[in-house]
Image 1 (cartoon, rainbow, N blue to C red):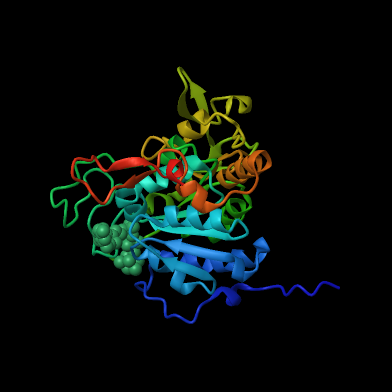
Image 2 (tube, helix red, strand yellow):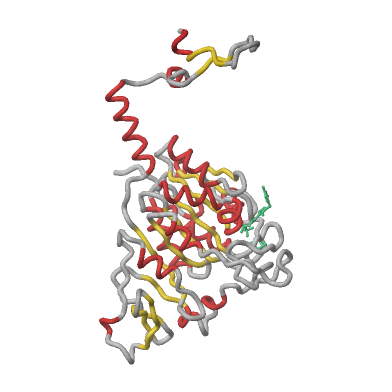
Length: 354
Ligand SMILES: Cc1ncc(C[n+]2csc(CCOP(=O)(O)OP(=O)(O)O)c2C)c(N)n1
Ligand code: SF4
């Protein structure tokens, strides 16, 4: 008989008081992560949540796992280092649209392209919540905030497009209000080998209330969102009467199922090596298109840590196990002379003098 203890969501709740505003969308994400973790089969002591700075980045305090509330924008970097140092860990990065795409944009991009086996959850509320409502890189043009009193003049980042352009091997979108969908996406992200990037739309009811109402309001949401399902035609609408068809030069269009044959409707495939279809879907947005939810891309590549360990193995097979001190004094290493009179400070390579 197995002596494994099955954990439940309560096992992942910490003893810390949750300090988000009542009604913040982040509560729903916390609840769903705590619900999903018992299913991924990893012991609590092997799970780490690493965050940057922001309301969303308070997340690690509320998880009864290991956690690091780290430096603004730098969580992906810490996560990559930790995963390399201990590949047995399951590592989650929690970041916001400000933390991950403003100050941390650079770090996020490189984590994605390196394909370190980490799970990045980007809480997108299209605003800086913690600092009381300045516009962020995902705020829509025209958004009026304290720092954009006449409306933001900037084009907004689309986090899915950014992650795809940065070569992420798993890219998905879900939303705070759809618990079951979020659970499915989190399970798939955790199962993926390599960097998983999940954008979670979440409502900041204090500084940006209703920014996603197009896709959450009961009366209109089904006409405004598209569920991406592997192998399934892209059909949507309250009466399932609309679809996406390709027309012209790789241009999608919304068509009525009354007017076109079912076989003309595009079928979703998140396993394509090329990210053209995923990217095209990521560009679809309101008001011309429904907003896609689900997995855009899920492909299998060598992870960064697998590549590193393979190189270490090859080097050791060829040259034996090395010593760190030999590495320090290898090749172009120089001793700085105490007597600088008449010298440029370079006396000779250390290993030449030994
Ligand atoms: C170096 C540095 N710059 C700026 C700040 C101020 N700051 C704290 S959190 C934040 C943005 C948070 O926005 P987001 O990541 O979207 O998180 P939210 O609070 O909305 O969850 C900023 C600019 C800081 N703490 N440190
Ligand atoms: S300010 Fe906004 S993001 Fe921050 S806790 Fe409150 S509702 Fe949530």
